[in-house]
Structures are given as C-alpha cells and as structure tokens.
Amino acid sequence: MVQTTISGLQSLLKEVPAAFISISPEEAAAPRPGGKWSKLQLLGHLCDSAVNNLSRFIKVQYEPQPLRLALYDQNEWMAAQQHGSATQEEVLALWVGLNQAILRVISGLTSDQLRLVFLKESGETVTLQWLIEDYLEHMKHHLGQIFPDDSRMI
Image (cartoon, rainbow, N blue to C red; front, side, top):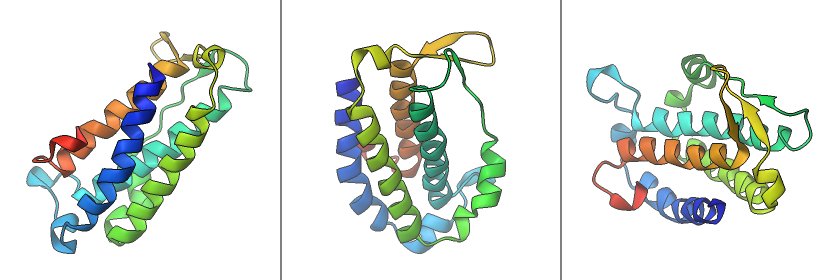
C-alpha cells in the first residue's frame, strides 16, 4: 500500500537528518570495512537513487506504456558526483530535498497511476506502486548500513 510507503518516507525525513549530522565528519568519511563506501558516500548513493527514481516516477505518468526501466551505473554516478568529498550538510540537504520532491509526486498519485507499468531489462513488468515500495526498501537497506544500531532507520 503506497500510504504505508509515504508514511515511512515521512518518518525517515524526520529521523535521518539529526542522526546523520550527529556522526562526526571523520566517521562519515571513513570507508567501511573492505574498502566499501563510507557513510557519506552511502547517503550520496541514496541521492543518486532519488534522482533516478524521481525521474521514473514522473516519466511513467506521460510516456508510452510500458516504460523501459533504465538502469544506471551506481559506481559511475558515485565517481561523477564525488559525494565522498562533499560536506555532510551538502549531501544531507540534497537527500532531504530530493525526498521531499518524491513525497510530493507520490502523494498525488491516483490508484490508476499506481498501476502504470515499467518493463525491466529481464522482460518482467512491474507497477509504479511496486517501484515506489522498492525505492523505500532500497533506502532502508542502505540506512541500515549507515546506522546499524538504530532500528528507526530500517
């Protein structure tokens, strides 16, 4: 149900900013074990996800059905955006702004719009509602990596 997803996103928009800004700049920028993305880069990756999904959530409303669900190269986006060299405040502000825009878009969708269809590269089709719900689950997965001890984020 998309209302549950909207409520979940609203909650995260309240919880994440204070929690993220309370992380020291050194901790935020430190690569995770195994050379994995830092917490700052993870939040930046969620910004890249938001940019791509916001575009999808809008385009499916006016482009021919089914809309091809174009993938994006997350590593190339990370390299181009250089999230790791940005400040916590900058990346956090971007994340908040993008997700506020997503909330505006998804809050106004009708039940007919939620049934609009995307075509995945596998040939499978998924609805806009499915993609919106998947967006939040993807976000929670990475927030769990940023805040492993905070159950409010997952």
